[in-house]
Image (cartoon, rainbow, N blue to C red; front, side):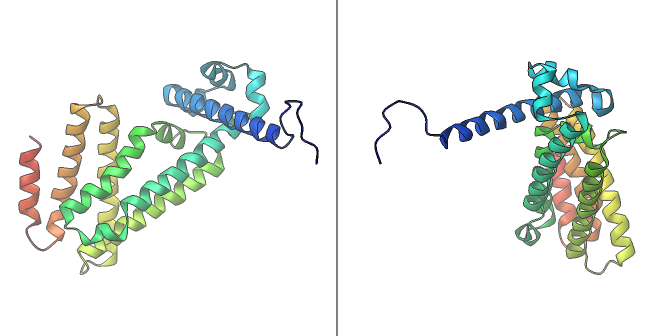
Length: 227
């Protein structure tokens, strides 16, 4: 086959480059959407606002997404995928081999880190007009988180009846959610770290009475260290 000395790119290279540019543009639009959702919420956000945030024309945005709902679905699915990965890291079988105080550290940390790194997750998932598909996936993720929490409680307190285990799991999740709101509202740095430590102390003091052994002493030590 004669060598092409014209300097032109092979035809198969051009689609790959166009695809890479398209992926970068989509990432740019999704990040802009995340910023605007955080600032104004899903309902108040418009495609024009997202285009302005991304420094592109509305026409450019519509080349990739037909409407705001399509943007929210794509962003939501990506965030849900990352959240599932955080859940996998938090609820790994190896973590259940740890004493309760250490288990709380390695379980809570990846969940907090995900939400701190992705504030759009809560802004999008808790909107009043979130697309149904995303709301359903979020509800399934929430149910899975509660089920995993019940499994953890059952591991550390196997004698608990199922209904009590369920009630404690719901309360544990409510404590975590309330603490997470305070963490996200705290300034980054020392204040946020102190708020994270307080949440862990609350969880430990709530769960310690379920566990046999020196857990209560560990809770007292943890509280002392965080003050």
